[in-house]
Length: 333
Image 1 (cartoon, rainbow, N blue to C red):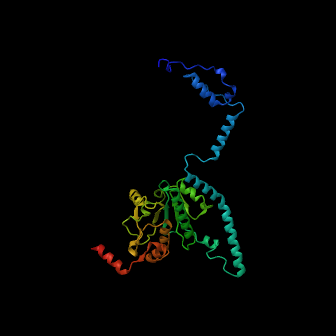
Image 2: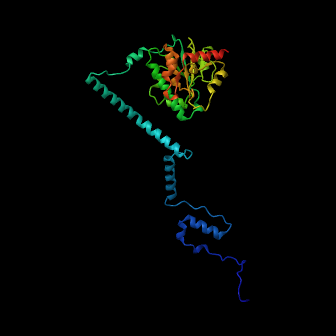
Image 3: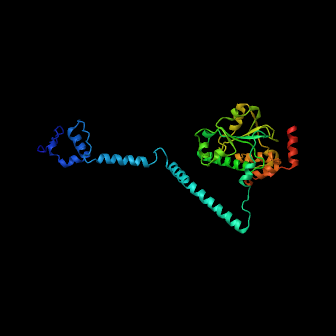
């Protein structure tokens, strides 16, 4: 038993001469660094020199090229897809419009050949005759577009589409109403989506980045909001009716009502409950509110106008005269 030798833990590790390391290993920076760190102990490893053949420069150049082609790291996969889809749409938009014009031209030629009417609506010359008069107008309508920061980009796009429908309806009217699109933030989302419609600056609309309180007399303003207790039973001459351009799906309920109270101006709601029985919510789009005001401005009654404008999915039912009279009796008691 005494002949068994024990391993001496205090025995020093045999040193190795650096000269025995093959020169071929010097080309691999990782091997030289790891071996030198083990052999030298606390000695700091030397920073490897750049490859004389320029491999480090080539790798750096490749990384720079990848960084320029790839989207920013902050964007998610879904955002990159949306960005790519938007870029592709901008490229194909002009080609699509040219195809649509060519298709309409072919239809007109075919209609002339068969002796059919060429157009269904008024011509451009007829439309130019019916321009809104801002000096002789009985009422005016302003759309408040100062809600850029309260809407996502998708809802801003919906808002601008509704503005386009308002402009189209007003342009084809025999008695167009003076229109104002106000509160447009310069460089904001609303302006960016409006710019996608070529020539929108030439619409028969007054665009402004100023607030409606700076453009009109406060006494003439009436902000339309469904939360108001005041019922709009008739259109007053000289009033400017403000429609809130906020597409929020009830996320900011009552914001326009609070805005009207904050500025100390009049507010009112459309007479939906007075003429209809609605089982769903009574939130209307911007273009629906404008269409209702436009029809009443043209001399149409409230009830047939509301039945025509409101979609059938809301399940609206006209209120009979007896029900309306009963409601008024209960309110007076």
